[in-house]
Length: 252
Image (cartoon, rainbow, N blue to C red; front, side, top):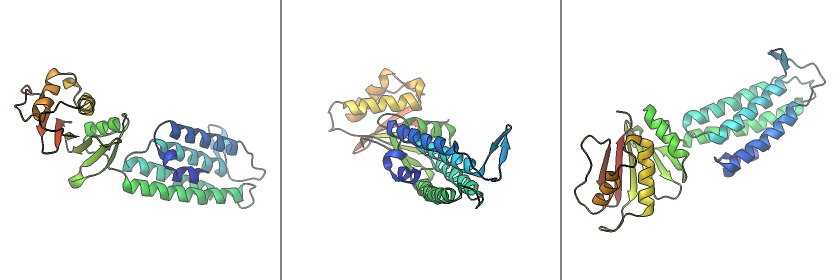
């Protein structure tokens, strides 16, 4: 069951469907862990409670499934993969004489498939930015609505794209840059440009959020006019042929 859920984009996503998948997995594991072995399999003692290899394995499998629901970066997926590996190792310790032996072997094989999926996701995922502030910004943008999905970029940078495709973000060193599609020269700013600009600056440079000069600067850049940005402001705005760019030094 877990392998089927793991292969489903819905089950691996963040949000309500992911939570439902996690709840379903939880019920399955709770039921399995409540089963009692009727043979003398080796046990660990934790806080005066005996924990069998079968219980260890399914418990670690539950932890791996839950961790996968929120995994974003390569480090996140590495942790998921490690948990699947620990679960497999525990299930392989179930004795052949144990009543759960056959099921443990099947479950271990299922977990191997889940670990392979986690490895694939780790290869596809973005590395965490080196700057702590940039890592925090990546996490925040991945949790916004619409959420940004990140992938490795050139020269150790990380690039993100909004779910609606209307905005991109680049995190490189101590700089974070938001790029928005540029409207026809002289046209008013679109609602999407305003929303994404305010959201990005609120997360990347809270001290500059809601400043009147921010939207004034975007409007000026859109019209190729001088930018009314105060000296020392942590935000830079520029106009490129097809995009408007807002850059923040995320960790001076």
